[in-house]
Image (cartoon, rainbow, N blue to C red; front, side, top):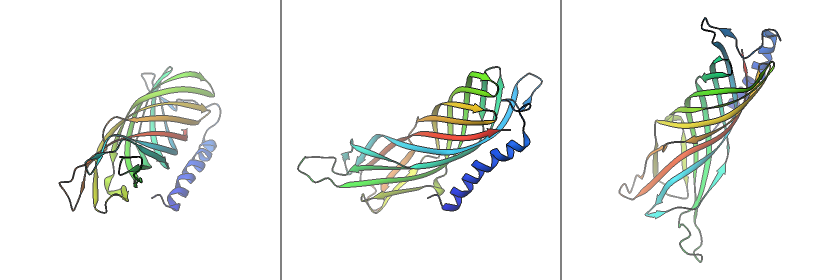
Length: 244
């Protein structure tokens, strides 16, 4: 879980960095481009941080031979922070850089899969806290680019390294000895919009998971029992940041 100190540090970065940027910049030097290469490509750097909310898409879920089709996603807040470089020419740009994210989510389901309306449901939950190091590679296009305003759309892949040793998966009221291994790598497809005023910007993005993040799942005491958990992760995120 994210501790209180981590939340405080995140908000300090979020609030203090734009203030420090304001002291270094003025209206004449503030623009999308911080530097320009000999080829005429604008190069700028930035930092952003924000919140996310995840939804786990279960393509196949089998518990003790019973296929679970009806489940409920319980949304929880996660966090993300990233550094990036942006390379632009005209209205086009390419943006990439390392990102650290914490994904929190919960799935609630009836273990009996509502086999009969007269059978009392027996609910279980999967609580996920997943940490990953990501590399987004975004192509963007500026629809509005009139100083000091910029409105752009962007899309591209997000390559993820899932930090399994720092992640935590809980199975509540399922079995006491379930062990799930997460895939080391995952790929999402991101689509989003960005609004920039002077050097401050706001990003809103939606990511679609393209591959199963669950490598394997089994009961330690019953390794031959059939358990299947094939899930992808879709994420909505909102970030605020600044360029320098």
